[in-house]
Image 1 (cartoon, rainbow, N blue to C red):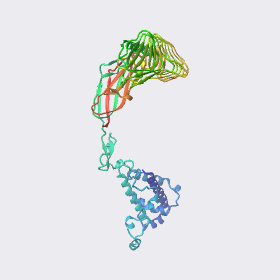
Image 2 (cartoon, rainbow, N blue to C red; image 1 turned 135 degrees about the vertical axis):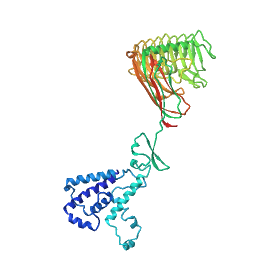
Image 3 (cartoon, rainbow, N blue to C red; image 1 turned 30 degrees about the vertical axis):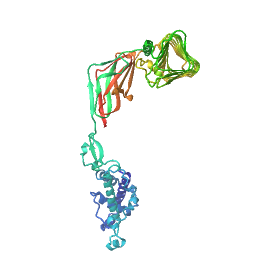
Image 4 (cartoon, one colour; image 1 turned 90 degrees about the horizontal axis):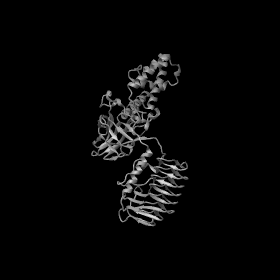
Length: 539
């Protein structure tokens, strides 16, 4: 109930108690006083009683409530409580066009006269000899309240909370029966409607799915093509860890695969195999291709690699000797070239001089990889058999773009900026490295003063199983749906629950499926699994 109306009825109740005390003490006097005005109160009619007691309030306002007998207080409390619960509508904040009722004085200015009397002139009122009595004032105020209570209950949106007692389109026992309450602008009533909930499930209880590849694999039968709408996606299943693998060993295996693919490429484009003396690139512009040199390769100035508008264009520089750069040398990428597709592969040591700006991957087979102080490298430093070291104040960031489809960058190797298959990995000074640093067989040192965005993963790390699952729409992963679960070797053969939830919006032609992959180890999904799409909004 509105707090202001509560105050009103509370005031009436209090004064009613005072009046009853007066009736007990001065019954005779009260009978004479009331004989010409009203009959003895009839509590069966609340508003009549209210009018009578309001008039008495104005005459008897100095009685002491503390002296009321307890039985009277209890009796009247019960009466008022019953009236408030059973007869008075529950009302909330009125609509904007309803005058605020803050207290009786606020009502007075509207109701000094009854509607009939208000239309008459003072002369006509005197002629009719019908003066406005206090009882008439109270009755008018009661009518005023009743009028605005009615408007509030029928005001629609903006009137506050809905009084469910006055909804005439449903039975009260069905109010909580899973219905939605909506305002009908045509009928100007609140109506109960059934919510739009459509469920599209697929359930499978047999034949588990083996996940042993880093390539996302569709989980059999977990595919749906529902009508247009917005859906809550729920995928529930379990997976078993069949085997684990060392993360650094897996990275070394990925590195060897990548190296073998690069070495298998033949010379392309305008560049032929160059033999004999070392090759120096000064200020040159080169297009995509595989550049092979039996001697050393050196970049002394600015080497510009122009992809000609193809972000998948591949640039590979191979040498049987060493790869080096001059101080301040730079590799510039243009024409949508990306550093993910630039490789400098050497059998000897691979290094940059101080303050070089380099884009691409330095990969050495049987020697070390290093950078000079102040080098900025957008790419990776990789050695199969050799140390990897970073000069002071160097900056390493992840390569840009996506690797050419003719090459394989393993999912484990992809997390590293610096990695050695066999050899130590070290840093000097306050360098910055965006991705992880690791070695399969060696120590990691000197990174206490560096800022590393990824992890330090030393050789001999415990074998793991890394399982990843996500929802896809027409073959494209829903970005916020990917879930990853990592388990150690001690939990091989154990089964674990797996739950995936996300929200998607479909146009009615798109297909939803669930795909899983193994970043490390081998896992089995199922056999029990379910994919349920619950529509939460029509398109």
